[in-house]
Image (cartoon, rainbow over all chains, first blue to last red):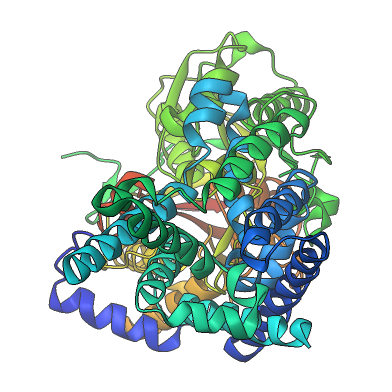
Length: 152
Length: 116
Length: 340
């Protein structure tokens, strides 16, 4: 990804030949399953959101609490050893919703517990979620900067 | 009706993620980074707000929604406090989710062990 | 001139080291596969009563070592060397198992080719007159390998159809300078081959050319052709790599299709959700130890075992390096070859 090795002609030919015979993923099945599972998780999220709105919050105020509930759900299913199976089944349908974000935080936290709470759980918790925060926050910051330059 | 729209929009975003995952050599972490950044940019362009108006949780629950949460905080804070809002706003709306993730993550790791 | 060499990369064992006994321990999923009834022990819990996956792997290796000593009726002091390796960083599964054993120890890293690497070196130690009894082991563990090479085990990720599952298990064999056979007769030592594949979820494709190179070299060096063997077995190319290897061999003029199989294809049930099949040091070690070794006494006269290894680390593939691979071939025969 970062520093692609230069391939010789022979290597390129082999790679091309092997790629041409490589079994591809069942794209149709994967997309349908991702759509349905992802859609259902969001529908559940809508239910949680509606509950908070019925308690008197504005939809915007309810965003945070809804996220927190969904994160709790994703985290629990990870702890119970269910979310990894859902992930195998649904792919992006389960890693794109915020429950998948929770899974990406809890999975390394659990896995590295055996290396201790500071250097294991603490240090590894953001193994996958870390990049999401780094680039999410940086992009939001940059969007803010552009906004400021235009509107100042 | 909002449930149907949440299903349609949320499902579509996930299906798009699956398409990228299956057709490119990108890993889930790469797809998530791409999605959160896209959400942050679309939010800056004012597009994501429209998607939320239509899809509700279908647009906020998938990860681009988290990007929108980050950007919307920045814009909001800038309108209130000017330039330094670019910094103080990033966590404005996102901190509920983020702190929940850290604390819950820690608690779950105390209570459970990996099953393998 | 070294008199036990022939051709470019092949050695002949002049005293024919014997495989005295074999033992295998395997995990739950392997224990549901076609080889299940041949394993000495199947563990149901991946932790195997320990507190970490890594400790469980060492314990499985120890279990196989103790079992093979029992089967061979050997005591520790009769074993002159132990050769063993695994996939964990600094091969700790083997090192920590050897910590419990009063046996001089060589740690090997050949990734999933470790088993035949060990058989080759063990055979040489015996043939050279440096040992009477040698123990060869290899182990791997799905969860321990997964967290080191890929993702935490609880992360919900989908695998492409080219991915392979690391076999949970440990195999151990005892070689000796006397005994009724089967015998190690020859070995072809692999060279490191890199055909430019960089996807760690497609290791069969990365390793197939290395297996083919070693097999072709073996035929060239010995003047044999595939008919010489009843079966030719690669270690862990799995379904994707096996198909490629078969066609590459055909291109080189060797049709092996009627006598070729792969341990990675054999170890799991076809519907076990393991994508292309098995991989890992234990893959060829447990399949050979449990399934093929007894067949050498009944059905097969000669077989060629070619364990295959992908020599990358998480660091190298994240830095964009391609995956180098290696394969070592060992010829194992029921009877001592005549004439030679």
